Length: 203
Image (cartoon, rainbow, N blue to C red; front, side, top):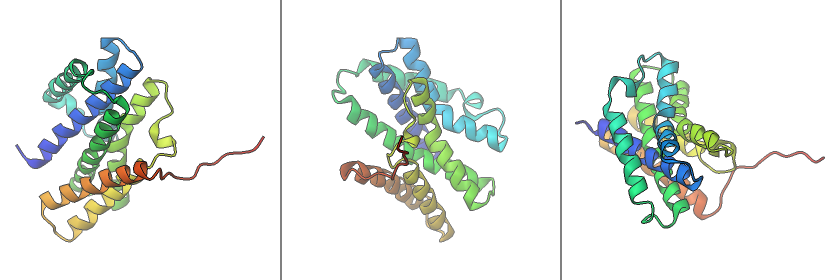
């Protein structure tokens, strides 16, 4: 099992738990919780594969992903009472997933020999659109449309990956550095309440 595959699995687990926590907070039934967990886990990657013409999409080619999502969903339900601070738990797993999926999207874009701008777009899409689908299904404004520094973290993480790759750093250093950048930006933004400016109009 390669390091890339391990990170891919960890990203699936993180987003499946993230989706489960949001769904349980919305008091959905068990089937609803599973659907949200599944959509959060594979939503960004599915959209990515459709756009780059990778058919069938990744989770249809390897049912291992379905088993991992199911196990993560069951874990979240069983230990929901242990996760006393759901908002903090949600932030943690969502941030981890964002960092790991940024790596996945950037790596796939590089292997496809896309232009750096397209690679960054693919990485951002892979990392954030599962959360967008989750929020829409749970009747919330998607996090990427709020003031939270979310997509910005993925963009900077993908740029970090490309720069280090260009200077021929080892795979492990690139992966660790990218995930640390993404997670650190999210943590610092929340800790110091940093956000992007919003637009509004006066009536």
